[in-house]
Image (cartoon, rainbow, N blue to C red; front, top):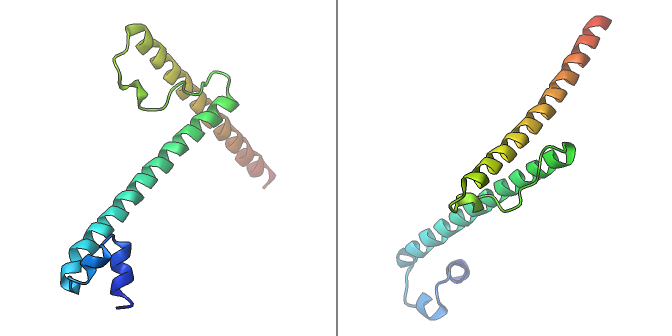
Length: 122
């Protein structure tokens, strides 16, 4: 009783219904609850990933004047666009990509210079 009642209530089984069930009949409730938890975890992971994408773009925009933070949420681009809007979007994404690659290249050059300097000292 100390195990099944709290577990059943947590899973959404009504108190009055609990008394008409046995552990075998509660198993579908357990499965549904586990599925709900897994789906909620998946949604949280997707939201965290999306937030990381916004942070990445924000950092790129802060480090390079050519990179711009999006004016609308990701995914809002799905409505029909005019050719001018499409060209502008492609241009902005190309600028963002160029800014990200520039940052990457600068880090790579610094690392390469540091390794060549340490090689000279040996």
